[in-house]
Image 1: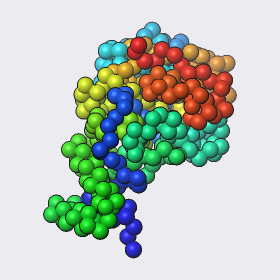
Image 2 (image 1 turned 45 degrees about the vertical axis):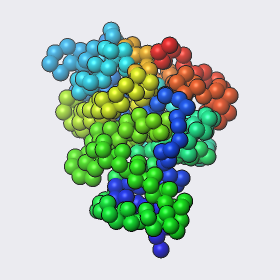
Image 3 (image 1 turned 90 degrees about the vertical axis):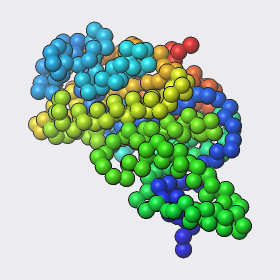
Image 4 (image 1 turned 90 degrees about the horizontal axis):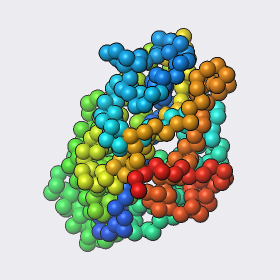
Amino acid sequence: MLNRRHLLAGATGAAALSFPLFAFGQAQTTDKRLLVVILRGGMDGLSAMPPVGDGAYASLRGRLAIARAGADAALPLDGTFGLHKNLTKMHALYRAGELLPIHACATAYRERSHFDAQNVLETGAAAPFERGEGWLNKALGALPQSRPEMGMALSSQAPLILRGPAAVATWSPSTLPDVESDTMARLLSLYEARDPALAHALESAMSANAIAMDAGAGDMRAGPRTITPIAQTAARFLKNDNGPIATVLDMGGWDTHANQGLEQGPLARALTALDDGLDAFKSEMGPAWANTVVIIATEFGRTAAPNGANGTDHGTGAAAFLAGGAVRGGRVLADWPGLTPGSLHEGRDLRPTTDLRAVFKGVLADHLNVSNAALERDAFPDSASVRAAQGLLRA
């Protein structure tokens, strides 16, 4: 027997929303918006944001070193850092003061398991599996609950970062065939007569699905893997006057153990997709971009030196990015430890000097006005020694 969720997933054709369903009849109490992009697999920060001004970089990276000058050179940021040449649109954001690159950052985790590292990244805990709730869910729960769903995941189920007591919704494209509008109207009429609650749920799902389809999300059911349609869909939900405050989307393809490449290869393709997706998100947000922050983070970095397969293995220190019209960008946030042998973590990894929890806390406090008490008690327990980063956003 189909339950209500299964029924709605089939009826809407391209929507799979979790209960309680996204509602469009509530007014927003804030114009601030947040998008969190999780890069799953461990992005190589030393390629995405190469420290070309570090004297040890070129020799340590060897065949994976990105040049400081020439046709395939890094896009300049400051005297030490550049961006991979495929991040041209993000570089334009940097020049406009809307991108804040962060380097030598990490969670509190210091091992090399994807599963454990992603767990810590999403829960905000000091160690894996210490809690079963996500820091973003807990932060949203500390805000005035002005709508049934404060957050939304662009996935078939809520990722760990959005799990917890605060109600959230999900949306993802379905592989089921689309349903004729006449059939939908008949279903809605039937529900209105027999089950008003289910009728409201179906109507909300249809509204959410219409927003997603208008953003071109139907393109995700076929064709090459890209985050552009899903990023546009996230923007459609966020800029809607009755939409969520925060959305989350995942992007895989960052586990580059073999044939990582430089200007070509899997990493270069993933960086291009990220660059295009962020640009599409900004364009779709329109004027709402001015009040938006995008957090782009990965579970850990990769080894400083390449391996024998022309790739990189699981590491520690990583790179992250803040983007958005609300971000005080155009500069690099890094307490750079250097890449000399004595500076590396365990002799192999970039040593982290910035705790990602400080960045997350700073954004939540200054952008969404989450109280310090809620940050310390609910979102990031056992992190009193990690102070919220200051000055990340425009005054």
